[in-house]
Amino acid sequence: MNAIPFEQFLADLSKTSEDAFIDPREFDWPENMEPTGWYFTPELISLYGSDTWESMDEAARQKLSFFEAVNFFSLNIHGEKFLISEISRRLFGDDSSELSRYLTHFVDEEARHMMYFSGFCRRYAGKIYPDRTLHGADSGDEELDMFLLFARINVFEEIVDHYNRIMAKDERLEPVVREINRIHHFEELRHLNFGRRFLANCLERHVNDWDDDRRAYLRAHLAGYLNLVWKQYDNPDVYRDAGIEDSFDVWQAQATSDRVLEHRLIVNRKRLSYLRKLELLEDAA
Image (cartoon, rainbow, N blue to C red; front, side, top):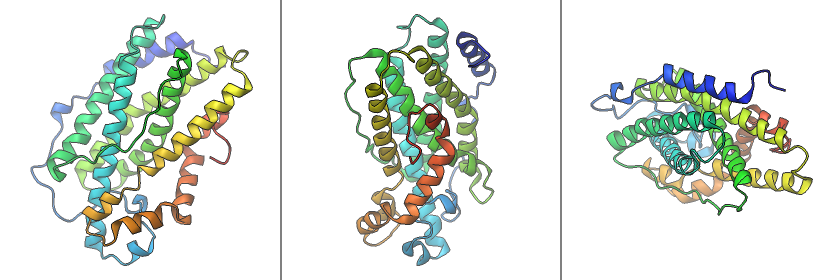
């Protein structure tokens, strides 16, 4: 059991959001970016360690790192657009005023995050990669849909934060990239904390009426969504823009390689342990 009542927990999060406000208008954007340099931690690049990677010189790897950053920021833009849309239509419909109060901060922070991600993509790449995510229809059960929304958000943000945390500290990267990752990591810690507590609180309230079939449905849904999230990190358009020949074939070969699957498994085990503790993901996920 959590020592702090849920309502007080929400009030504390809201106060922190209010006290730790970061204004994106004060962000220092470089006029131009150098054609060389690292924009994505090399060890996190989707092709790292592959035959294609080994055949590339440093300049080609750095060019790939730029478009990997554009893809990473793009998928964050699309993820946060969906999040804002789904949360916004649920605001102030709950009996808890503290929940709506905090979710208003949540939405505001995600909107500001999109300004950083889109700012980089538009300024330096001139584009945002298209959204490749498919979203299914609601189940019709309002509380179940709210639960699934925040369970999906938790999956998405845990993986994103794994990358943010590493790249915020990687001194090889361009300063603007480090700073975007640092700001996102700093504010997403609150969102992750909220998501974990929200899910646990909901499960506690439904310990007696959400039966085994419903919980099996939740696990199957999240396992499928987790697989979909990871697919967004491998984008053939990135390889084409980076000048890699036969980019589609390279994408097909690497997307299911042992190297990639091992990386995903390591991140899943490290970052999704709380969802496994709640029995929302299988141990192997």
